[in-house]
Image 1 (cartoon, each protein chain N blue to C red):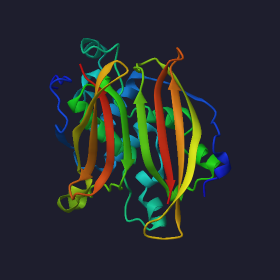
Image 2 (cartoon, rainbow over the protein chains, first blue to last red):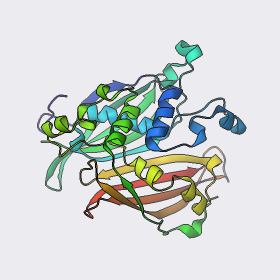
Image 3 (cartoon, one colour):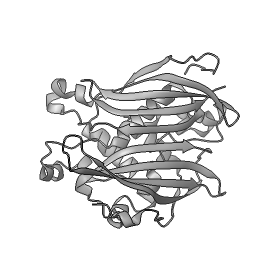
Image 4 (cartoon, chains in turn orange, brown):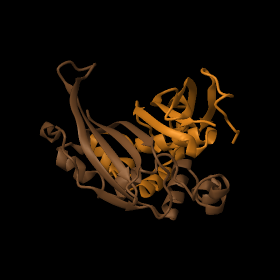
Length: 150
Length: 157
């Protein structure tokens, strides 16, 4: 991780683009267990078919978690002061028997840029806008975070 | 349909003890990894975390979602209390403010309150409304320090 300082960051700078692995049902099951969110929408295909959905969908919070990872690959975890997202779309996992045709919808790319530099609570802080979208361009998350930098 | 008379109601507090293994498990899950040595060492190795300037291992940014789900009996009792239909539920927004560090052994207490309930007309279906319920949660550690303030927006489509 680069040592990012307040002085070295400018409004308009992009954060490094982060790309996830294609989200699999196994990733979603692991996330269900880790988080405690066992809504069957996220793992039981016989449940979602009752609502006319073709397949399970990812936890929005897994996509927020992936977005959080993208942020903390760039800034240190202890720098994070605020992190907020608006969920804009659902994410379907990759179908392993049809991997090449379905991997893009399950691959999350996180981009962001610095929109503000300011002082607050005696700290030098930056605000960044972030977006998570899949490989087809469908937006999953619009959000922002605030980090305190040395 | 959300029960609008629940605006302002406070849910019973829940507690959650932060375990080192849970922090690593959660970091692996959001990192799509199968073993902890594939995620940052600050999520599982106390010595590495201390060398990086942390008091001990720390959780990844969205870890506090576990507190209510594992410590608070999950989402279902909240939905039942508010008369929100699981089949129509969407997670609209989630927001965290990080006010103090979290380490293994901390005992977190969360208190949630319904701070806003409102309807918005659907753009594509005039006369039909989406219903929004906003929950604000304050999470304190065993020393009474405010650690996380969060806001969750639940949407019924």
